[in-house]
Image 1 (spheres, helix red, strand yellow):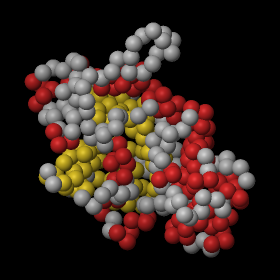
Image 2: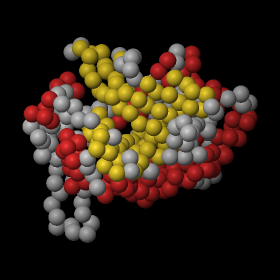
Image 3: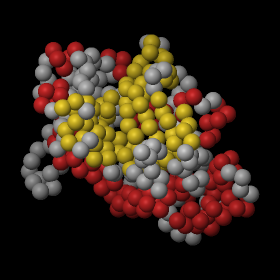
Length: 333
């Protein structure tokens, strides 16, 4: 059986703060295969970015990883234990085997250094290319992502690019080292819908061409429906539902996923009012016991939900839900 490109198991991350250890991510488990796009969905503050940064060991120095946490990257029949990498070995994953596209590229590009110089510097760090060859590769990649007159744009600065073009330049920079895994953290949030569609199509084409895996992070279920192969729904640092995107969106099994779906506008009936999920996501400092969604759940079973953490239940074809209601109706995953 072929190993997944990356395998995350029981990932638990706490942050050492003045108030003590605060749990941001708890027992998160997922795999991503080469050529696959996994969507990670959830409200702001649900732990999506903390999870993604863990794959590149980019979380702050006060992050504490539970000893049972595991992140294994499989490249060319070699298994890399990400969490055991020392500071000198981390360049293997940071911009090498794994690259990341950030939500706002203007904040990620150095404003006083040209786009081209930043791309070349990355290639010189992660390869044995000469500067001349790194320049050629950078210009070729800018052209590949659809930036017009790439040789001229190579010399320009981030503030001279439009929002959509900056996002394309960041994708070009992320892909120039030919990573095995691309992390896209809300890459379309700041873009208008036309540019969103172009960026999504570009990423799907690049997955097919380079056969890489992508972790696609967003809160937009419309984007998820058009982009990913499988999706995982995250709430307060916990994955509460996961499976093939069509199965999850057509038959959401967790009340939280159902709430996200009900909050979407219905294009076939614009008179239907939007239904918001009641309450607010709790602070990690006041993490609920039992099911983490029990304080906002419209169908809570009371004491059972408030005291016992639900196990995953297999709904169909690998569609798993961590909910006591599903647990009572289905079979354990």
